[in-house]
Length: 225
Image (tube, rainbow, N blue to C red; front, side):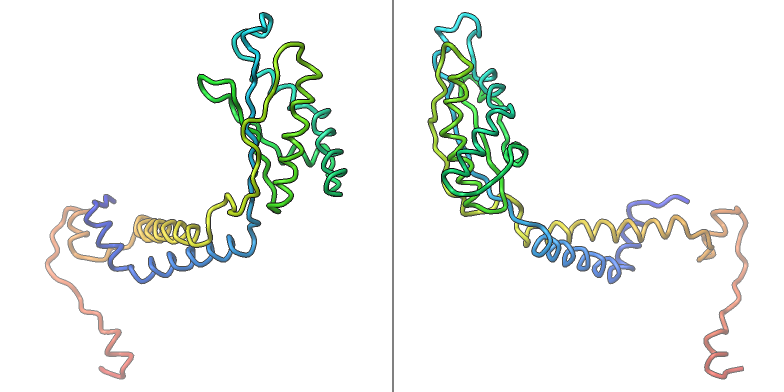
């Protein structure tokens, strides 16, 4: 059975109530899920600059990628964990710290990169980022004979979560529900093999239709003869 765009539109308009109900259900579901089951995530960020590249014949023109590798090790996570405990009393394992940190790629045509710290608590993200800013130069200095890692942008306390708002997720759910509803209507039509009109008989079997038998079921239900 072939269904044209015109037929699809007619199917959707005939089942518009069903499509709208599915859309609203998905929209409300996405809004509730994002509001009550998804924890907001706050991100604090530190920007570093790898200086002294021109005096380093062994590391080439940019040592920033190597410095990122120096930081992305368990030893550095332990340093941050101990510094965080000493400054704030928050006890996080090196594994916890590693899951919170994300190293960006080196910014194109520069020797700078970012370290982002994500947490459900904005104060925790900020404090971990402060420890990263303090301990990262020490970690790099213990590895690199030439070159210095400098902090060029200190972290700030995040006040807005990085995730999508509940209203935005509700709107996305609404659109997704509309598409699902339309898909279900079209799928139902594809799976329905019954013949509904005389024209379908002519189209399928290439035989003319000379007449139809009226449906008397409505009168019989009312007691008609």
